[in-house]
Image (cartoon, rainbow over all chains, first blue to last red; front, side):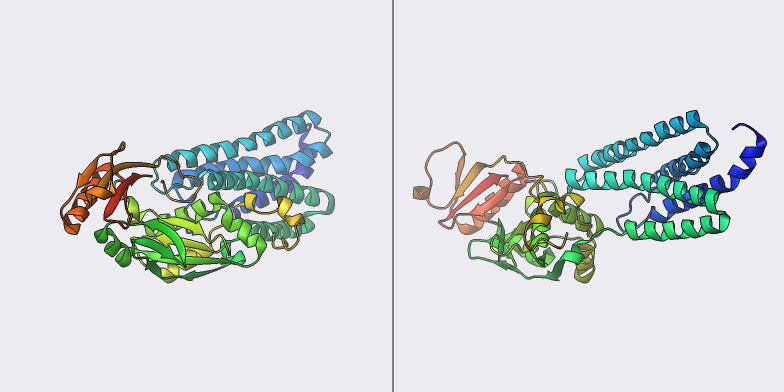
Length: 302
Length: 70
């Protein structure tokens, strides 16, 4: 910066922008039931990156106002580095997936990674907004803009959930005479061993996910979305599935006629109401929404 | 079949063994055939085979269980 004098009047916008940016990062760093990123290391990494992102956002406009064009160029350069957050998260999750018996799946990993990336641009945006408003209209307006931006961030944090699109209810497991297992009338798998059938009767849980409308049917058809559901439930409630015990693998199959999804689970913890709640809370993957479907008749849920 | 979602399914379907009560229901082929005397023995043998081979047992309904690697 050129002199202490110009720095002095630029300080309030920068500080305000920084504070609100970091606050936004903390606000959207949910340690929810999906336990990510609840690892202390993950928390530290994202807090550190959040501090940097907020500073970039906070400094950019004041630097421009002070005609520090070189500084602004550098800041923009640094901002693009936050694209790497997506790579970082993707690699971490892919690594974790390799050792999971019920992996998240590529689609879910990509969705989570993209969310993390987006949150940094959100932080930069909040900081830039607050510092600009403070610079132009004073601290009072700056704080007001900051609070509004935080409220907006909270709204953005809450994505769409399976429960927004579908009814989720328990469904009995039924058998045919040859050991075919059905959930809500949907064929799951053929179990030839009597002993295993008895255990499935004891441990198994059937869930029926009924789409409300065509948009919901598209969501449930997506294999990545189903994998995300199976992973979440398995992660939360455990599973009996084991190497060389293949019949207990959780499974999701759709009814070709109605689009209803039948889910077969073998949780370690058999708390059915909680399982239903967890399924309703599974995020809808971005890639299953929007796009071409919006232009089709009746696709208005997107 | 890994965690049934669909995206993760690997297609490696193959009958790796057959456990048969009736000799006339099965003939030749690439998979070994285990003939058994009773339904109880059939269940026992099939159970062992599935645990050893990490495979599923499917009932064909004609006294034959096939052990399938998914």
